Length: 199
Image 1 (cartoon, rainbow, N blue to C red):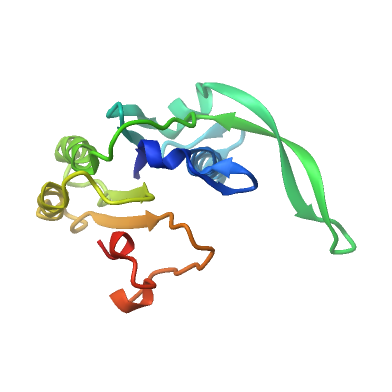
Image 2: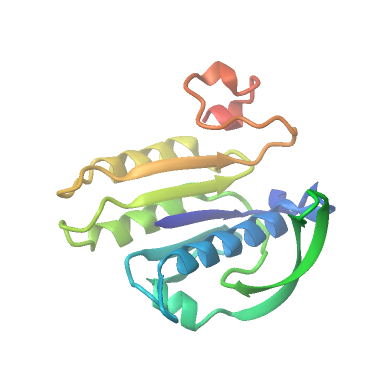
């Protein structure tokens, strides 16, 4: 699973719970990675069924971390205490303290060189064993790339790769400014006439 994370300047804008888009993205990614680790535990060790790669793009473009589950489980950046809202026995929403491993920090600045992130993903994928499952690439962004044509070319290059399991799967999570939520749209006109989301 390869996560491409928009860390451009626009991700500093406030979004939810008075946190920035970058803060919320990092929080959700840390939770998702922790959930993947917990789902794949055998006793007190994770089974290395999944390789995770985190690629950030913005002012800096880089592979933040790439490794098997055990590498993530054994070496988080730190462990934070966070508040989590859950339903109690009466169905009321309450806050509890939870320990959360941190694998990625909130970061934002610069433009949106999305094509560079897809190119880095291509480099990682092209080294894969053809017997591995097809990679899943999840691009998380709030805006348009610096260069749409280069980005499309980079994605097309990824989609031309194939292994014994088939072609890679590419998903986009577009963080808009509206509270309207669309999951797995089948048509462009479901995207509220938002050209960035449509791209």
